Length: 474
Image 1 (cartoon, rainbow, N blue to C red):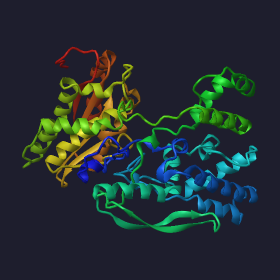
Image 2 (cartoon, helix red, strand yellow; image 1 turned 135 degrees about the horizontal axis):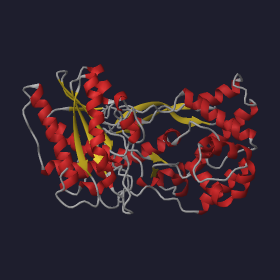
Image 3 (tube, helix red, strand yellow; image 1 turned 180 degrees about the vertical axis):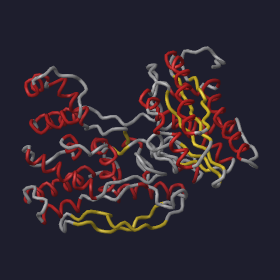
Image 4 (tube, rainbow, N blue to C red; image 1 turned 90 degrees about the vertical axis):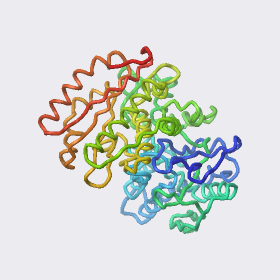
């Protein structure tokens, strides 16, 4: 359920806050560069606040000379411990909307990256995302967590104002890491008034749509692209090989450490451009539109049934899956899996759309769906259950995901056996004619795997081609 649905809000066109799904994290992140370029309202002065924090830590780590045993270095690491920001309902998670956050391990990685920057000759930074170019392990989710942590009170005030406007109930939550006191070099607690997420009983933080992207504006891959386009001779001389567009991050880090001046050139280049947030209306990655489209379809095509036996439960789940197939093949659902430039979307986009259909049907029939947001990242994509007796496992994969089909026995069948679940479903999404040709080999691989493990797995083919005739049947 979206935030607006939960609190019965009719949004006006003037409202530009992101409307999150409260039980499933959206794979978008807060981009500090977007905040820097659009400081408005509660967020005026945000960039300076962030940079003052990091430049202070630069000084502590420089004074410690990178010595991890130094009290100054340890103080810097402790300051870099950011509790997870599950209140945002954004990013990667392990279950529900609770992510791994930015703990002690990440703090050590960021501190090490700052020391790398100092060794490279940098005495201060203009955008803290620069350090992600100098060290592995600092991704979009970590940068988003840090930004939200440093600007926590600003996001809280922004959320509280929206709640007052729509008369949404709130309560005060205590945050031990509420605001950083530069004079005392320590975190100060804050009490923040926020709405409650009914799915987690945790607070909710809302974010302006204009601050969200799948990747930060400043990131290692784009840094390399900039150097490829503008500093090709430097790279060629430095690495003594033909320069290619895509390389491993190790090569990017090596270049950045040897030539920190290139980072500054790259940052200045980005500052001259106008950064753009993720286009939620076009939704090229299929990260947001899946929810409303699937909700509307399920509302127009209700499915209910009795579950007096395991067979009845399995039959009902089969009907849910068949409705997904029908939605994609016969109700133009396939359009949500293709971009305007006729390129197909990712497996994650297909899994989200499938989740939308399955989740809404399960809610109507009192069936639990878990994990809801660990899509494609755990041992199995979806587990449907009603108590312990009625359980089924579902895996949705693209037909052209050859890596998965080659390692089939490591996934669903093995997990079924470990969980003592007898029924599973493989939902195979085909994007092209060549995908269709793979179907027979996929069916054979499933039969061979399930026969060895003595499990029953049904294979459901979903034709999501964008060039097929109507009413196509496989």
